[in-house]
Amino acid sequence: QVQLVESGGGLVQAGGSLTLSCAASGTIFSIDVMGWYRQVPGKQRELVAHITSGGDTNYADSVKGRFTISRDNAKNTVYLQMNSLKPEDTAVYLCNAVGWTTLQKGFNAWGQGALVTVSS
Image (cartoon, rainbow, N blue to C red; front, top):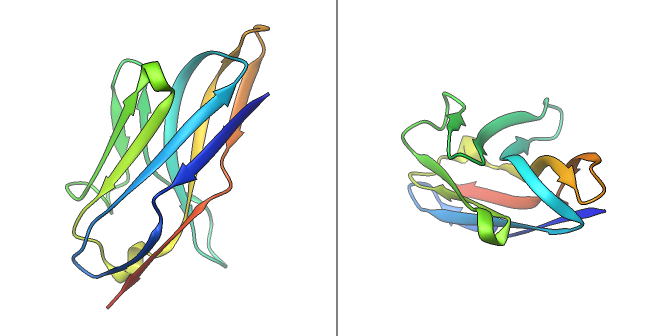
């Protein structure tokens, strides 16, 4: 079983910065992709950014140039540095990890979510 624990959410003024962290634990053999999604009530969950084990990244157009995703493979941890935050970035941010367990079973795990609120 794989668990993801997020931290770093909170309230920030527009133009400010926050960093989210997500640590994966459990029977992990390898994690191929780690990423961040966000969800606003009444809207579809959307991809914010993801990063492969090799360091390749992909960002939503709405966050390019403002957010940076990184990961520490040794710690099974992914980070999301969010700069120049806007009120429309307000959402619950969910961590995601896709990989393989030590029993050679694939997993697609989600964290509980971290609320980010950006005030205008």
